[in-house]
Length: 324
Length: 256
Image 1: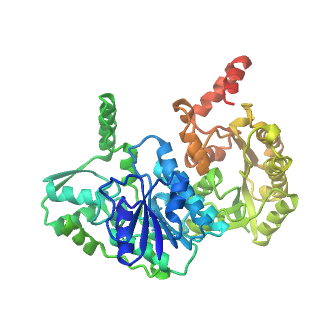
Image 2: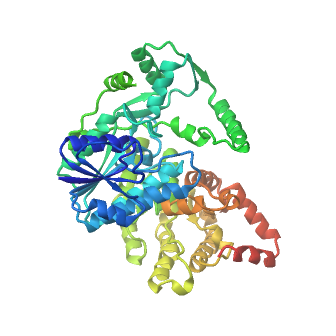
Image 3: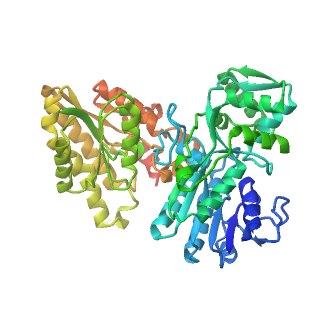
């Protein structure tokens, strides 16, 4: 069997490509830069030079493929130009869907994000049917939601599609923009002091990279044609997460809390200064706020319908730390 | 009989934000919107997490029959309406010469006929539940006459005049009528994208629906007649009253 895959040089796509190749699928990977050092190497992985913004390059690479995995996305929140987000996430997704529809692909598995649901309400974990309660906080969330609308459009036309809303991913893998948790672990290991904003009660859901890969394979193998699943692991707040990482790594880092408003003000001034002298800005206040938003969720639908089995945070973190 | 707040067009945008805000105030809700717009999911989320009663009706309000159907369904469910929020509306869609006849006739049905008829149908409910209120969602477009918004502006100006007159009639029953005229808001994903591409100055007037909804309801319960959410929008209204027409025309012509 043949599968088409985008985002093979990204955190999730890279490992998914290797997993599918190991399972004896022929993987047609659409790659923008064939010189990239992040291209997964395996005899079953065939590299096709192309770009999701270029329809004919997709069509060429997707020919004779049974399934489509679309993991590519523009995620760089430091970017201020919404066109970059729109072109890759919305226009690019539409191109992939159009090709899949024209070529009669059996199913499209679309990698999305939990952030399209916005923050969770009080202590209620986000479920697939929860309506979004607040406005979009950044261009990534907005364009990923728009791309899901495109997926729904093609579902109505008769193209089977499964959307996977992945929570915060961690675990061994490529160092990309998308694995902040790994950076956090390294900081706890290396630094003697860690300065953090003081609202450590903010809780999120953390999912192990291996589980995300498994969920994609399960979604492909399942008989279910159209659905949306939250793919997550455990919910935990920063306080407990830091504690857990410290215990596993036997780190003696001192965690120093700083007033959140102070951090925000400081960051605003620092970024303004960096812009003035022509340096790229650090994490934006907007991004920081989104990192400290409550985003707890449940994957019970995926567990019951896809037989998805998330790894516990303890085991996942240990595996991650061993490979850092 | 339980008393409810009825919100039309409640599945997305401003209507949804109003529904969530009302739910936070522990008000029972009757939510109405077009079929398959996520209304049922919104209703069940609000019902189970805010401990309020929620009835949802997926009804297209562009016909007289359907407005009557909504009234009958509410009565069948033993509902009585204390507050009516006429929010459902069809947005503008380009130059008049390019608009299809069906488009603007439906626009008039949804933006004018439906709110007028619903106000009439539930008038006994308002009297029973007095003090009670009606909130009609108009638009800044009812003051500023922008190109490409011809029929839309007209329908919104109708709501403004209708509400102001009705307010005087119904006062004696303890029923107040408010009009809210929001400016640009981040409602649908398409509008969010459009708004983010605006220049810095124009972007400052754009509100998130949850912020507009919070301000609107606060003033609605103070029984204010005209509600303009957002500081910049209030400034626009002030400038509108002091600037000469010739300058205003120059400004609005640039918006084409």
